[in-house]
Amino acid sequence: MRSKTQLSCNLKLVIISLVFLFFFIMLFKSSTFSFSQPPTTTSNTNDLSIISSQETEKTTKLPDCPSLPLTPTCTKNPPSLASALIHYATTNITPQQTIKEISVSAKILQKKSPCNFLVFGLGHDSLMWTSLNYGGRTVFLEEDKSWIEQIQTKFPSLESHHVVYDTKVHQSDELMRSGMEQEDCKKVSDPRFSKCELAHKGFPSEVYDIEWDVIMVDAPTGYFEGAPGRMSAIYTAGLIARNRENGDTDVFVHDVDRKIEDKFSKTFLCEGYLVEQEGRIRHFNIPSHRARLGRPFCP
Image 1: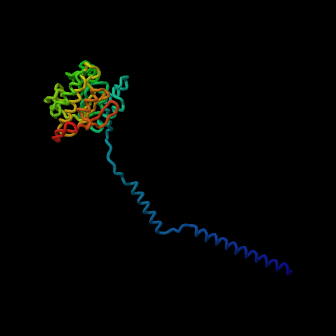
Image 2: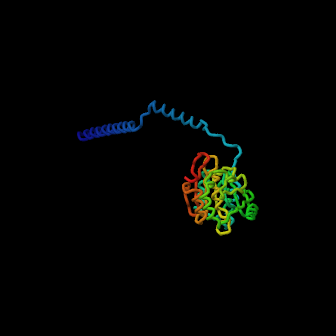
Image 3: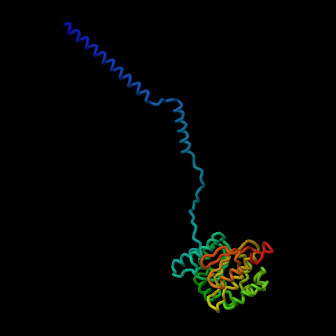
C-alpha cells in the first residue's frame, strides 16, 4: 500500500510541474510576439494622414501646360531645297567643286544666310547655292546667253543676268602691270566710275547698288587664251566689297591652281585678307573701306 500511495503522489507532482511549464512557455511566447511588433503611435497616424492628403492634392491638381493648337500644322520644305534635292538625286552631273571646297563657303553661308549672295557663273551647282542661302537673294552673272536660257527653262526660279567681258586671257600680264602701277586702281569707289582698267562697268546696276555679304568668283571662262579670263571679275569683286557702307564681305575665288586666279586674287583681294585655302578655293574676308577712311588698299 505504501508504494502505491507514493507513486500517486509522484504522478501528481509531475502533472502539476507540466502545467506550470506549459503556462511558462505560453507566457514567454506572448512576450516575444509583443516585442517584435512595431509600436503604433499617434505620430505615425498623423504622418500617414498628411501623406495621404498630399497624394490626393497631387492627383487632383491640374498641370500647368500651354494649350495645344486645335488644328495640326506642318512646315514644308522650301521650293529651292526641294528642287535641288530632286535635281541632284536624278542627275549624274555633279558640281565642279569638291565637297571640301564647297564646305568652306557653306560654312559662311550657314552663318550669314539669309543674305545677299553674288555668284560669278551659272552652273551645275547653282541650285545648291540658292538652297544654302534660303530666304536671301542669290544672283548669278553668266557670260553664255544660250546656257542661261537652257538653265532658266529647267529652273526658272534662279535669278541670273547675261554679262559681257571685254578682256582676254592673253592680256592678263598687261592688265596685272597696269593694275599694279595705276593709282586709280588703288582707289576705292563705285566700279562704274572707277578709272582703273580692271574695273568692270557693264554689270546690271543692281550689282553695284546692293551690298553683297558673300561673293563667289567661279567665272567667266579662263582656261584658254581666247577666253575672257577672271581678271576683271576678281578685281571688281574686291572693289564692290571695299565700297560697301559698313560691315564686311566674304569673297571666294575658285580655280586658284591656275595662274590668273592665283596672282590676281593675291594681288587685288590681298593676302592680308586671306582667311583660308582648301584645295582650289580661297576665302578672303574684306572689310568696308568707307566705314574707316584711310585704310590702305591692302593691309
